[in-house]
Structure formats: C-alpha cells, structure tokens
Image (cartoon, rainbow, N blue to C red; front, top):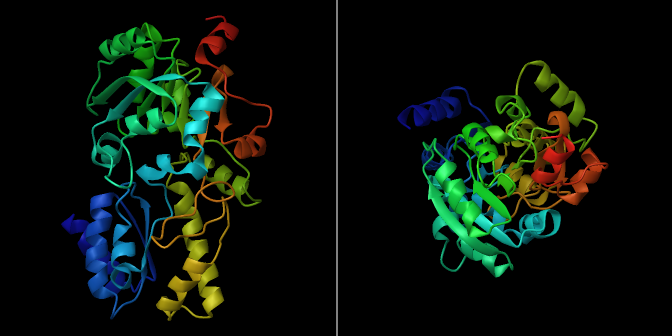
Length: 345
C-alpha cells in the first residue's frame, strides 16, 4: 500500500500525469485519499479499472467535491443485482434453473453477496430466492480450497439442477476436474470469473471444462471496427483478455474525447463534466457514467457477459442475447450433460 501511494504521488507531482489508472480496492482507495489532497494544486483523473468492491465509488456520491476525479470504467460486485444486466434471466431463461446450489468464495469483494447491504442489496441467496429460484444448497468457500469433492457430494444430494460459484481467486482448474469426477457432474456449473474466463482454460483442464459457462470470457466480440485489430494484436503478444482490458484500452480514448470537447487539457474540472455528460466508444461498448461515476449498464452500454466452452474447446457467448447475435449468432447455451453425450463421453 505505501508503495502504491508513493508511486501515485510520483505520477502526479513529478510526471504531471493527467490520467492515472489504478487497480485493487484497498490500493485505489488509499490513492484516492492521497489524490484528494493533491487535486487543488495538481488536478488530474483516476480510473479504477480492477476495483470490484461495490462501495468504492460511494465516496464520489457522498463527497463529490473531494472525489469528483474518480471514475470506475469497470464492473462492481453489486452489478449482479442490476436489472439492466439480465443476471437472473441468464439462469432462469437461458439455463432454465429452478433449484440452485450457491457457493461464494470468502474474500473482500464478495462481502455484499454473503452479507448484503441493509436498505441497498440483499444477500445473493436472498436475491435468487426473491426472483423465483430456490437455493437448495449454500456454502462459503476458502480461496485456498483444493478438495471440492465433499462439496459436490452435498450439492448432488441437494436436488439442485444448477450450481453458481462466485469465484475470482478459487482454483477453478482443480474445481472443474473434480466436478467431472463427482456425482454432481450432470448439474450445470456456472463460474463467475478467474482462470475460467480465459480461452486457455480449456487446455488447462484437459477439455474437462466442456459445458462450463463463465463470466467475462476471452471471446472476440466485434463491438466496433476497432475491436478485432486490437484483440488480434493482444493475442499475438500472448496476452489474455482480462475483464479490466476493456476499461484499460478505452480509458485513454474517453479522456481524449473529453479533452477535445473542452478544447484543452488544463481545465480538469471541465474535463470531468465532459465525461459525466458524454458517451464514449472506441473498441468496445458505449461508456457513460452515472452520478457515482459508475458506468451505465446494459447493452449497448456496459454488459455482463457469459461464455460457454463447447465442442473442441470452442468458447462462445451465451448471454446476453444482444452479444450472442454480435459474436456468434449460431450458438446457444447447451447443458454439459448434453455436450458430453454429443462428444461421446
């Protein structure tokens, strides 16, 4: 943390950076506090691109004049509750979930899923149940866990037709390999994020990821004519598509357009207003920000994407429908049990 703050101060005071990207909730929060003291003499912007804790941008709403320079061109954990993103519809309409086993890894960014936020967000368990999906098994898991078979046995006995594992740092490679060996192998498994979001996950699991959907999949989606050239170049360098890639790539273009609207790069207050009132698009979806400086949600704005590993490791978008049409209109979600049958497994 001290190193992050020291580096931030150097970028502001010595290097005179107009825009600084940060990641990590604790680091971004600490840097924002320092930046608020620097802003009057060295105005600048902060884009937090890997900071998912739902409460991070509360500071913008609560103390606007102090933290107006902070934007989050990224997803937050509470996005699962946003009706514009169709999270529940993915389970109800795409998968056909009626009874679910819900597992949440025990880490800071999942706190809202486990505990909720009084008056704002229910727990994830309550959220599923309020939307007509019965939670028949619930568990909180350690991110260091390596033995998942006992959990799968309990899930199999629960009568669940689907499993949702809120992941980010869980060993999803081991998890998937044990799922295929377990009594729960025919229960639809959905993972949130982590290694499972990479196309390489297929080889990492030896093809046992067949049928697994995950959030923020490394799939080429041609949002604009800039999308494919950028992603081709990214992949040619051996880089994967992290969820933060979208904001990291589009971020400088958001700044560029805002500066052009203002007519100079000196009036940072005016640049902030231009970002607050504008809509921006470069390589991906349209970026527009609300009063908390969170991105507006739901296609053509910031989406919530699920991809599924299908035959021979083909990774396809299966939600939301608008992006299915854009990326792979011939594809649809197929239960793992059916995919294994098709593959002769």
